[in-house]
Length: 129
Image (cartoon, rainbow, N blue to C red; front, side):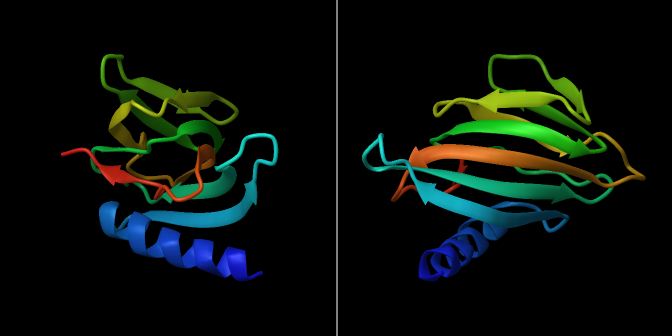
């Protein structure tokens, strides 16, 4: 339980300061990866309000995204933007710079599930500006 509370504090302080107000991040689970020393897996949901978006950022992690509700537009540097609908997925590598992350709709909310594989001591998000 203490680990979960610590995770909530870290995510709240690091992620919310670096994302726009219309983006809500909800941590779900973090667990050490026993066969990969120093690494952990973390699962969270991201909710975009209608028209919501993220600033340019990176994660220093492997991030697997699965759209649960609505549609989102994602783009990492060097690749064209993609529109993802419910049931579609996206991958960000540790060196990718996330140029676009936003709700594709200005009238409906969107939600996605994100699974991170990262160093235990690493924050979830870094500014890439």
